[in-house]
Image (cartoon, rainbow, N blue to C red; front, side, top):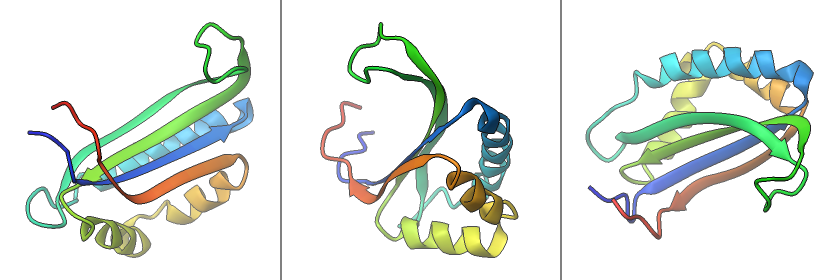
Length: 123
């Protein structure tokens, strides 16, 4: 089933070495909380992943030297835009680590795309 036209959230955090362990802890907590999301209907969570890896000195050259920072990438795909406000309301109401995530985010660089639309998908 293709994700074409589905709603997409991507958030990337770039943090220094001293903040990686807290990122690992937060995303373990986040993953457990995400298991409670609906899997059917307009608000359905279709796909969820967290990735992490080294930030490179030249982001377009995979052979460039690492900077020492780590990039965490959150990737969520929802059936429709209705999943996004439902997700954030549930986070405010039920995810005990939302405040800690906000504090941790201030220690690094964050780039976010909320309610994007998948415009290319192969499968």
